[in-house]
Amino acid sequence: MLVAPSILSADFGYLARDVKAICESGCDLVHVDVMDGHFVPNLTIGPMVVESIAKASTKPLDIHLMVENNSFFVDLFAPLKPEYISFHIEEEKHPHRLIQKIRGLGIRPALTLTPHTPPEAVEFLLEDVDMVLLMSVNPGFGGQKFIPSVIEKAKRLKALIERYNPNCLIEVDGGVNDTNIKALSDAGVDIVVAGSFVYQHPQGITVAIASLK
Figure 1 (cartoon, rainbow, N blue to C red):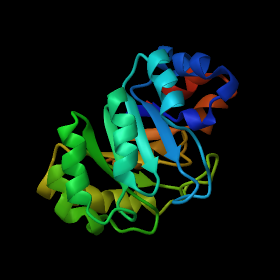
Figure 2 (figure 1 turned 90 degrees about the vertical axis):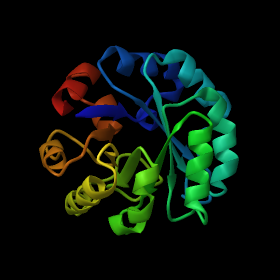
Figure 3 (figure 1 turned 180 degrees about the vertical axis):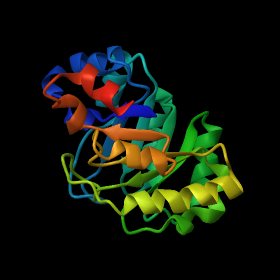
């Protein structure tokens, strides 16, 4: 299991410190939630802050766009050379075109599904992406309760991936902890995003990440 802690749960007054802490504690990716206040009812960070995160990080960035006008935001963040940029299928009118654009910029394209969107919605895009992110909470805020139906959704997605693109990874974001991680792994999930569980773990960040792995 790969672990991608979300910096949404970090202390933004000590952002560089908190990014370095997860990198030194064995994370695999640094998950960056970009929200525009339109697609979701929250506003987070822009390229200047993400540039600071990139400088502090020794692990690849995993940028999750929760925005309208995806292509505009891809242009903003592409110069930072993240490993992944994921965008919401619910917002994009021409997803295949945007996938090609992201890959053409040397970045791995990924699709994101909100809790209500079935995995079959991306069936005919799977051959062209490197990852699908399943939201296990409603996007917009950290610290929400895990939606259990994502486990069955991950199983259905895994079956589609094995048919169309076995190299495509499954990532799950929202309410992930050490009590549901085994069920996610059994469902075929490759990467988990965890924010509050990692940064607010009573025994510290290293123990939190190790418990997920």
